Structure formats: structure tokens, C-alpha cells
Amino acid sequence: MRKSQILILFPILFFLSDCIKSKANSGVSDNVMTLLLVNSILNSNNGSCVKTESIQSNTIGWWYPFGNLYYYTEIHPVTLDRKRPMVQVVVEHPDTFYGGLFPLWYSDRNNFNTSFINRDLASFIGINTHISMLPYAKDTSYATDPAVSILNTGDSSQPLGVEFNFTYPFNVKTTLIHSCRELDNDESNFQTADALSPMSGLYHTWAKEKILDVNLIFVNGSNGQAYPIQTEQAIEVALEKWRENFSQSSVKIKLNVSVTSANLIDYDLIYNLGTETAYPGTLGGLFKTTSFIGKQNALNVFIVREELQYGGVLGVSGGIPGPATLLGTKQSGIAVFVDSHRLYSNSGEVLTYDEQLLLGETLSHETGHFLGLWHVTESSGDYGNLWDRDPLRDTPTCHISNDTNLNGYIELNECLGGSGTNSGGRNMMFWTGAVGFTQGDITAEQGWILRLNPLVY
Image (cartoon, rainbow, N blue to C red):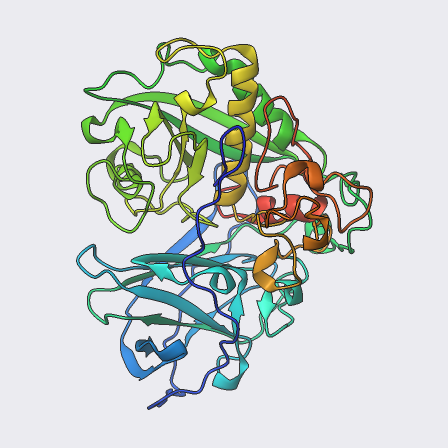
């Protein structure tokens, strides 16, 4: 999520510093459930290749991380290889159970001592919904704690596994989403390196252009229209900025955009930006409308007039990542708010050229989140913790020592230096922005993650 013209960051829910297990009543069975996967389908231009499977989440024991009771399931097999290069797991509680839940990964599903936490879990435990994925980086040792090596570019998979943990072991829905698009040779052979300057990783060129289908949804209701003219041409400047960012050689993804208008009476103004519940006026409720207004193999983008919880929030992604191809969840999309982009125009008017450029930056940033990218540096700066920055080697970061005004935030003007540890402000995934300041840098490893997402083909 990104701030408006200045700064904002939602508080992180829960921090995890160590998640190596000491379980009560462990009882992990050697007979893990077999994950049935269809044969991989080779690259094609007919759409994304995705295999989605629901998992029966039967609890087999409990433990007390940080003094809180969590029930855990058996370890389920996960396959990662060149023909199935990325997997997402989605865990959902009903609205009636307001409790924590999270996945725990294993580098060897036959040995529960090989558990590790991913970048998502290092930042927060989900409340009611949680999404995780593998890999978060080409070099996964940057993305996990403890550091492990995970191969997803070979012809066979190591015995990876995942279990699910939740406060309330009732009516939990768990889903595995596998990409089955085989990696291109250059994607499979891609290597990355530590960022030494703000220019690191920017000049890589992928051999083949990929495609991302986008379903742009203008949300109208009793409070009026999201935008006065609801066509692709009416926001052409914003869409061209978005396309420009994703078409550069380090990404090379073409956007296929379709536009629709939707009368969603309860969601034309958003009062709550949380995805914990699906009540009217909440972001989670808006994203659940993808069950009837969304497109399964596309990125569903809601154009909403205004959010009222904070005022000035430009946009929000349903998750990092969002659930690819899974409609009707409380995280199934991204939302951008038109009135937060107004610098000169009045509500109800067409956005000016500069305002549309800002909208294009927001669309790029939130799409990055939904496809799996974190902020290159979080607002409190890089202390060296897993949760301080993204898990990619080639993105520049900004160490906390660059907080020259000592306000506890790493601001944009403090992250425009010339090394790999005092920059990143020009990256598309920097945590905040400024009006008129271009943030279109996308590194090769960021592009690699974007291209691996199950929605991209």
C-alpha cells in the first residue's frame, strides 16, 4: 500500500523474530497427503496456466508461539521446479472467527525441524486471511528465516512442504495455487547479485515479452460515479505510464486492459481499508465482489472514488501477493482511489495530466504488490532484519543511518544516494512517493518475480 502525496504506512500487525518449532503434541504423520497436480502445460499465448487445489485442513496438534495457542495441520507436499516455478498458499477464516492464521514452510517435508518462515510471515500474522508464496526471490536465502536454499529452476523438486496454523480450527479454507507455465531458458538461468548502486539490475533484457490481462472496474453507487468518463481513453495517460513501467527491458510484460463499469452500491465509498471482514463499505467486501464482477485469469483493479478511513491513501493491494486467479476472497484485487490523486481538479472532474501520471504510478506500485513485490525498504528503514526490506538481492535499500532528520522514518529525499545502501527512492516499490517524482525503476530480480506470477503468461 502507498501513501498519498506525502507519507503514510499502516502499522504491521505482528512481528516474528524466531519461528523454529517446539511443538506440543507434535504427532506429525509420515503419511502426508498427496497433492494431485495436472501435467504442466508449456508456454502459450492463450492465457495463464494455473492449477488451483483446495486442501482439507485437519488439525493434528497445537503449540504456543509467543504465548498464543495455534492449531496446526499435517505437512502438505509442495512442488517447485522449472515447469511449476511458483506456488501461492491462501488461508481464510470465516468472518465470524476473528483470529490469527499463517502457513509454515519446510525445506524437507519429512523433517519438521527444517521449518522456516517466509518474508510475509516475518512481517505479520494474518487476521482472517493470509497469503504466502514461494519463491519470494531468486536467492531464497534472502527471503527466509532461517536461511534456506530452494530450487525452482531445475527439472525436479526437493521435498518442500507447508502446514497451516490458525487460532480457530473451524471452517478454515486453504488453497494452493500453482503456476504451471514452464520457465523460459533465460528465466531459468537468471542470476542476481547484491546492489552496489541505484542502477544495479536495471539493464537486464528478457528474451520474451509476457502478458498480463487487466480487468479495470469503475465502481459506481448511490454516492455517484467513480469517474465521469469510464473508458480506457479517459485515463489513457495513467495507463500509458503503467504500461511504460512494465514494458521496460527488466520486466517486459505487456498489459492487456479491458474496462467495465459496475454498480456496487455498498462500495462506491470505502470506510474501512481492512481485508479482515467482508462487511459493506470495507475493502475486503469490495474484493469479494470479484465472485461476480471479476475475471478469473486477470488482475482485477477497482477504480473507486474515495476512501474515508484515512483520507489521501492512493491505493491498496489485497495482498503481497494477491491470490492469483482466485475470485471472491477478501484479497482478490487491488483498489485505487481517484480523489486521492487530485492535485488541482475537483471531485467529479476528469483528472489532469499530472494527476493521471500519479495514478499510473499508483497502478504500477499496487500491481507490483499483488504480483509479489514488497517495498524495497519499509518506512522505518533497513536495520538488517528480514522484515525491513524486500527479499531481493539486486534492489537498493536504505539503511536507518540515512534518517538524517531523526524522525524515525526513511523519507524519499533520504534515499537518493549513490550506493546500494542509501538509495532506492526511484524504485517503483519504494514505500512512499512525491508529486511529480518519477519512480519507475524496476530491477531484473523484481522483473523475474513479476514474470513468474501465475497470472502472467
